Length: 252
Ligand code: NAD
Image (cartoon, rainbow, N blue to C red):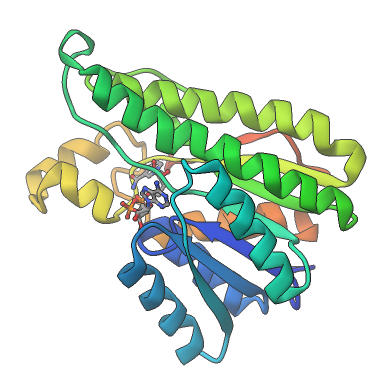
């Protein structure tokens, strides 16, 4: 990918799944990677993976719902690496599977807090820093759940529709500062999040991937490739796009 080598990338939720895969992909492309997660063990493991392949990474313990912590983490990344060129706002939780009438307000608050407030907090400070440093590119992790509806996970779907909307607004506001903002909308990806849904059961996984034309889950690397592409110079005229990476889920 063009324009990644030597740059600085911050990835939230980088201690597992899609975030870890993106952190590794950024490092493979020559970026210095700030690995942020609420999970210290997972984050440190991602840093080790990157260091073992000769890349440069540093772990930042971060709860993305905490505005003050987000502000100081973004500041620390700039101090430690000399700038911030790319961000992947990816930390997320799934909530509880239940009809809307049985969802608790506590679960609603938790899901909206991590998935939507978290992305808002990150955007707020990343955009300010990038504007001061001559531009950059940001990718938020939305989901096919940000493009269509479904039964059983209404807080999650609402949060991801919010991420898609926030992405468009941020892209419009930041364009004049030389910052592009996009989102990836993955379908089913084989990560610990999906394993929690399926309980590792093959029949449950088959049922989960059934709405995808390709009838399989993506690997985290397939989402990471899309994120790094959207940050690269190869996507220099792409902004404000919630991009499906979904094996044909929303095409149907
Ligand atoms: P995952 O559970 O493997 O990873 C999520 C990471 O986010 C974990 O490391 C977790 O510690 C971190 N995290 C959770 N709350 C946090 C907080 N408050 N602050 C900082 N970090 C926090 O899940 P994943 O599948 O890799 O999911 C990553 C993103 O992709 C999420 O936003 C998810 O909604 C989205 N997504 C996943 C799928 C899928 O099928 N796996 C599909 C579409 C979208």
